[in-house]
Amino acid sequence: MNGMPLWEQRLRAPVQTLPRWSRDRPDRCVYETNSSGIWQVHAWDVATGERRQVSDHPVGVREGHTTPDGSEVIFWQEDTGDETGAWLAQPFEGGGSEPFLDGAPRGWNGGIAQRPGVVVAGISTEDGAFAIFTSVDGSPLRSIASSQQWLSVAGDEHGADLAGLSADGSLLALQHAEHGNLMHPGLRIVEPGSGAVAAERGDGPAAVIANAWSPVPGDQRLAVAHEPEDRQCVAIWDVARDDWRELEVDLPGDHRVADWFPNGDAVVLIVALDGREELFKVDVATGEATKIPSPPGSIAAARVRPDGRVWFQHTDGVHRTRVLDDTGAQPIAVDAPAPPGRPFHDWRYTNDHGQEVHGWIVEPDGDGPHPLMVFVHGGPHWLYDDHYMPEVQAYVDRGFLVAMPNYRGSTGYGRAWRDALTGDPGFTDVDDVTAGLRDLLNRSDVDPERVVVAGWSWGGYITLMELGRNPDLWTAGVAGIPVGDYVMAYQEEAPSLQAMDRALFGGTPEDKPDLYERSNPITYADNVDAPVLFVIGENDSRCPLGQALAYVDKLAERGAPHEVYRFGTGHGSAVLDEDVRQIGAILAFLDRTVPGLQRV
Image (cartoon, rainbow, N blue to C red; front, side, top):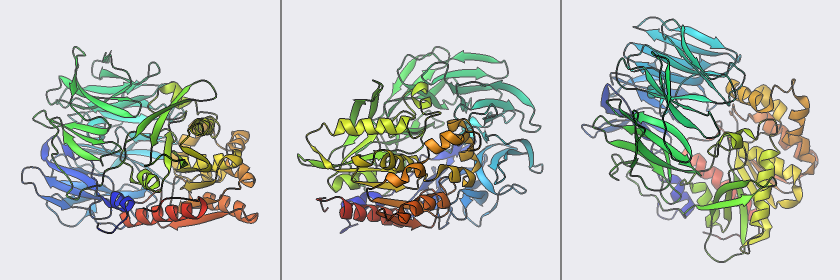
């Protein structure tokens, strides 16, 4: 990478996810990496050390698993980047790929789980239906549950083989929003063959989320994260006996179980506080917690190997994402080095309600005064953690002081903080971002005449709301894959996003017309004076193309300064060349609109 600017070297430095494996064949691992220049699924034989690329698709593939016996790799493949697709299977040793679930409709991925003789998949379709399909002992695939409300197999891409099916495959955990609130999902346990309900938890304002089943066959204990009070904690639910017991661990922050130890006597607990995570081994009988060594920073996922060794995925502002174990070693690593980033510094300020808002500041070299970028996260129910972020480092290289607020609506700061956004989007969150700007302008090293707001997805939405509601505060804006016209977006977006909007707004645009108008960026578009760069995906099913262009057209009608960069896939890119083009376009826009930037 000689001759590349530092920002591009960081962006192109390959990363990989934590490997996943079947408990029945733990030496056969699957992980994702962008080492080829495009995110693809790879297979790794731990015993021989052999690695190979499995998927080969131009828009990228970001999720893969092994079958329980390790004979095949399955992966979710999209055609255009709009997130609709299907599961494919390929022999672990290599060969051609074939459809994995005969009879399943194409649609959006609603999770997958497997145990010997049992396969479960969730899929949602354009008609707004969510369905769970199962095959038991080779029987034809059939739907055992469906709903017009959000419904999914429990577990994410890290825990689908841990949270979905019990160790013996006799019980299936489903997450749902059939009480009308996707942000506080309920948990339903069913029999995978018939769909008969075995147990239920959660029907109110607190989320109940399956984390991991005990790995011991016949042991029907499920580790569950829930919110009896403000902070997320963990319970051990013996579903067979309907025995629910809190895992009493006196550690501040949000708790979730990443995995069980092989004999079922202890769990790996991830404790998250203010954008950093720590790992603990917790005895489920006594609640005794023992720290698992890990560097300061963020831990996205952790798994326990059969020998009891804990592998986890770690990053911080300086170090790119890497796989470590509890000895500090790297069980698997990418070959190419990554230039270090600058550290993330904690930032705390007070909003208009007297509440403390936490976030991060990344500082450039020199005394300033520096141009300022307020870089806003998406979600909205997400957060910026202490993370290696080449994009942020690119802006700091240009001389920006970059500030990242975790506004009300962010996860990681308690249920009340997250839920404060409900019924008030575009105001609760935007007001916290604006309060952060006021705090930053009190710094002597910040130039108040060079102030940019930027973000992706919900961060792009907040960018447009800031530019429209507070036009005098900003020099320029960068709205990546944004919501521009919320009413139009609701009609065009994926079913799961519609479910989120119904929960966030309390209904559809027809149910809550005044609130959607108040919270709609296009309502304030005539106030926008600062130049805006739009980065828009042509096949985006979360923040669709049409509604974003409707906002662009509104600016064009009155000659307001703006630029548009369009790319060919969906809600972001899995291709490094495209990532480089996008950040290059943003840096060029900032060079044109913000005077005095550094050249690196």
